[in-house]
Amino acid sequence: MRSPVARLLPLFFVGLLSPELAGAQPAPAPSADAGVTPAEAARRAQVVARVGDQAITVGEFEDMLNEAPGPVRQRYLAPAERRAYLENLVTTFLLAAEARRQGLDRNPEVSASVRRILSQRLEQRAVLESVTPESISASEVTAYYQAHLADYQQPEYRRATVIITADRETAARAITEVRAARGDLRRVRELVRQHSVDEPTKARDGDAFYFQRSGAPTGDGQPVDPALAAAVFTLGREMDVTAQPVALPNNRFGVGVLTGTRPALRREVTDPGVVATIRGFLVRDRRTQRTAALLQEARDRLHPEVHEDRLDLIHLPPGELGNLPPFDPQARPHADPH
Image 1 (cartoon, helix red, strand yellow):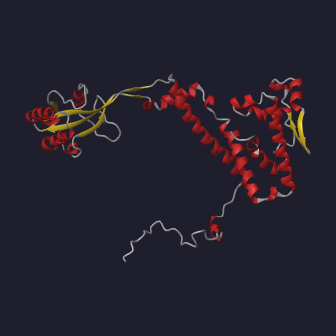
Image 2 (tube, helix red, strand yellow; image 1 turned 45 degrees about the horizontal axis):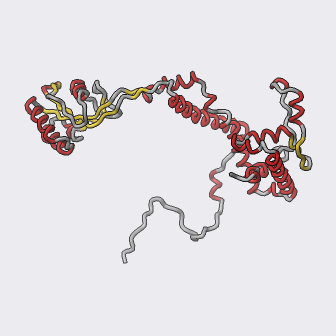
Image 3 (spheres, one colour; image 1 turned 180 degrees about the vertical axis):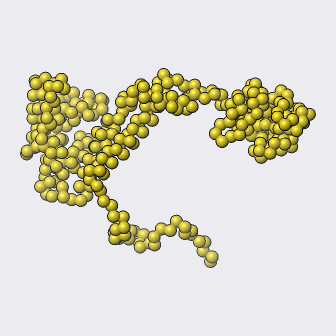
């Protein structure tokens, strides 16, 4: 666990840039409309520490402690722990004030650190804290589920190696030979090359990939004749072969050998795992959108300028390896001929 001083370093850097950002001005007391009584507002407005012109109120200090995870907050139930945290906070304010007095706030490296801290805090407040799984409603989860139903409900798929023959006798002989192969897929592929007359499947050693009971394929696979697909779906174990030749169009006959099964998938929107997954998708998507909108708002307001043509004016000293030539991705090392 980080020490209190380490946890307060971001506040130290922000304090270098602006006393107000470091907490120089007490936070305004919550209004009565927020359900806070005048007595509660007065309690929070009391100053618990002061460093020069910077005041830390009870409310501000309380909010800092409450930002910690639950187990950590339990430590601060002890008065000694709260006192130690406050002392470290005062130390941070003192160091920040002294650093400003010495002009460190004008140091480019410090300014860059402050900018990073501010940008991270803005992202935390405006994106991460505003878009959470709890902010995704049940109706939004349902709408996403319906729009992506194929991801959660799929029929059973089977995979088969098929042999397409020009006559029933050859198909029957192939069935006998597949049974004699006793599950040897290499032998089955040899039988495809020996007996099959269907060039597309023969080129894949008979592999028809995955298909539904209707013969409809997955992805870029090719459809399987519905009669042959139905026959494969009657098989009970992998490497079982269809009991008899299946009549196909154009006076052909098919033999199917089961090589894989993909069980049906049916996950309902009421499944807690489905809900959590969908909320995760939506949170990531909306955080990305919120960040993009935040940046666009800033661009529209500040109109940043970038002069890429001037990047060539930047000079960098050679590194430890010396003044190496520019990296050429097309160049390849050549073997020493000697």
